[in-house]
Length: 438
Image (cartoon, rainbow, N blue to C red; front, side, top):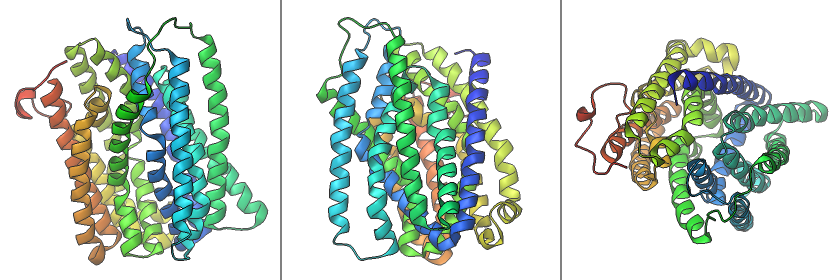
């Protein structure tokens, strides 16, 4: 992809991502103010737990379909989309229903707490969430990047905001339960819209006669590896909040969730660039053009760092003012955690986009190892730092683990592909010569 095209498409996706961040922060502001720290903390904990459960429900099928559909476009061995998609849906349907059933059974034997009561409702969100991710992944693999970004970001956040705020105002109830129920409704609505769009796209495509069909064994084996990567990656991103909920209070979780929401503003540029380029990495790698891959990766790294820096610096040095104005004085204790999270994101951007490169070029097993190392580091730091420092300790642990993860992934990209995705240094400064170049 040419730099001009990359910038144009990233700008489009970035504009959507920025709008999504505005809507998502607006959602967080309304829910945080209306629910209060305790109820908001309960809501945040349940949403995080459900997000983790959705990963085994998806079984890595969205990532697998994105990669294989993107790689097959223009390939001499096209993919038979219809049959491959149906197999993916069948596997995800069986897995998601099984997870809900097991989860409901386990919850019958747990202590009766606000979180356990809300989990019984939230568990049902796993089913529409898993199917939604699969449909969105297919649309992404088909090259509809803007549509994928719209569905997975601003439309989902907007639907949750509109339905949630309307329900609370109409019922005059401001509880975590209403927030969870309206999030379930938003996922279900977006799933239906997304399915209609996918059907329209598939009808316009030329049917493939005798195309390759993803076998059930391939779907299960490769998808399960993507799934395991996603599980431990999500655990890496969320273990700080989960351990904070276990080791501290619901109020501490609510405060930290506000800091995390603000920190996600820094990541919107990273999300925009990776959304555009993840399928492109698979396509370039499939034709063996390492020089073009290196050029594309370096352009991506500069864009990620520049966009991230513009957003991160004000949050690092003005977090107190940002939280006081946006979320209210009751959330000001989260300002130091926000500064630390924003700084962690900014430093991690120095290493570019190595994780998506590894996943899209067939090196997802290496990602598994790197995430496991970083997750172990995050767990250790959380256990050490959360008891004395609370949310600040969780922020330090999360930031150190994220930087470690991106650095190790950057080395792995060089060693496996001979490509340097860091902002600094030449290829030879990151490690030994590549073991394998494809």
